[in-house]
Image 1 (cartoon, rainbow, N blue to C red):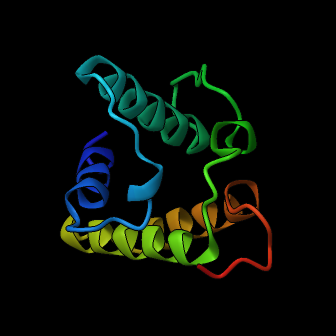
Image 2 (image 1 turned 120 degrees about the vertical axis):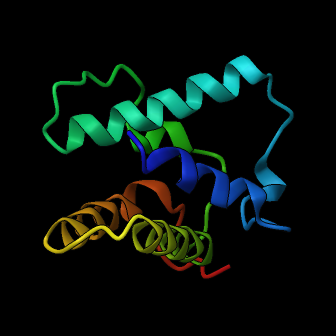
Amino acid sequence: MRYGQPLCRLGMDHPRPPHANRLRPRSVDTLNRERQLAVDFIAAAAGGPTIYLGRDMKISHRGMGITKADYAAFMRCLSVTLDTFKVPEPERSEVVAFTTTLESEIVEGSSKTG
């Protein structure tokens, strides 16, 4: 999936990514596995032939303290990635709509704003 890696890089290359306080040192193997799980999740959710074998979003993000501000920053990275690859409508809106539905599973506490 050609969009997933640049999106992951955007989040990691940011001088101070919003989620930096939640990152622990990870091996190259672990980073590659996490990246592949993200690609599989997106491809499976989009109806592709991929099977996602990871945990659900709520369990995967529990305890990370992701706020609404963090999620908004992620959505901005997503927008930049879609712009970079010139993703056309209606695909762009479909990706944004799908990603927006995940917010309630990823953000901890609906009143947190960052």
